[in-house]
Length: 83
Image 1 (cartoon, rainbow, N blue to C red):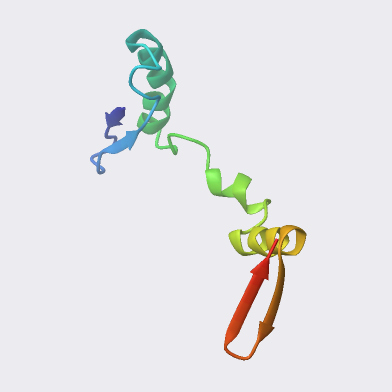
Image 2: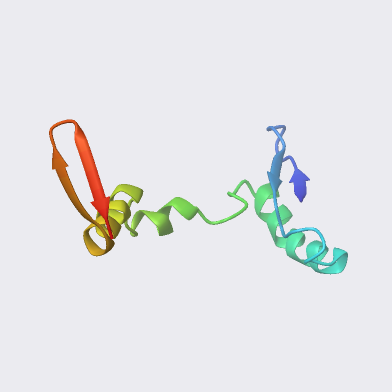
């Protein structure tokens, strides 16, 4: 975990890896560019929403899943789904 503040703004926290998987030395190496970006006034990591915006939504995935693996018949007040 990296935590630093720049220009009197609130501290920013960024996870650099999971404990036990990333060594202390590797975490320090990963943290250096993140701290530099924060001090420069930039976002510490690239905006993940831009990459996710291109993919399908949860609703689209659910509809796709239901169409491909389930046959649902609905009558008033009752749902029946079978594989």
